[in-house]
Length: 191
Image (cartoon, rainbow, N blue to C red):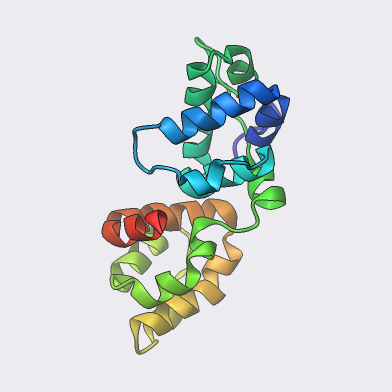
């Protein structure tokens, strides 16, 4: 985990916005042109806690911070953006672990567990990358690979290493899935 230079989280930054600025933030989030896009139903009428959850589940933790900073600057909330963790000449590193531990109970890979178990077809390369990045150990790798089907391997991965690796491990898992199964991840994001 990065050194904590500020304890301000995305949730805190959104909570500090006036109602008018929060509505502008939500409108800017919906108007974003880049992928992935956020569903209107996930944003409209939601509170700052839910919006923070949507940001993290859609963009992962590092991406959520980047998008939040961009949107805050876009709606002229530069002071809030600076407090959140980015100064023009000296970027701050911040920890947003509190989002994933307190208000964001389900990571993308948890939310889509069943679909991922059923539909991931590139399990051996996925496991190779997870092993290389230290998310799973050799013993876990061997246990998972001993399973007969892709579905059984994914189930074993979920019940063991992914259950224990925490949010940062799941972020890595998600990034690997984006690379190996881009169409599947896009489909799940859009549904």
